[in-house]
Length: 88
Image (cartoon, rainbow, N blue to C red; front, top):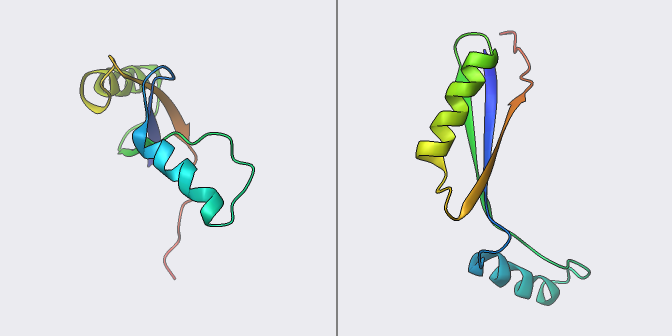
């Protein structure tokens, strides 16, 4: 089984109030030197078949139409290696 990850982030020109709130809180919590924080979403999709060009094209289409609002968000699609777990 393969895992495809879709990361969705606000476009750089879009205001990110949640990221700004986290950034302002960090110094009060003792975390210095962080210049910017942006908030996003991560979707993990487990595929039953092979991850070929056709499967990635379908995932890209899914992300563009359903997972991301492409007016204000960008997204990336990538394959993540999964470890096979053997039952003990």
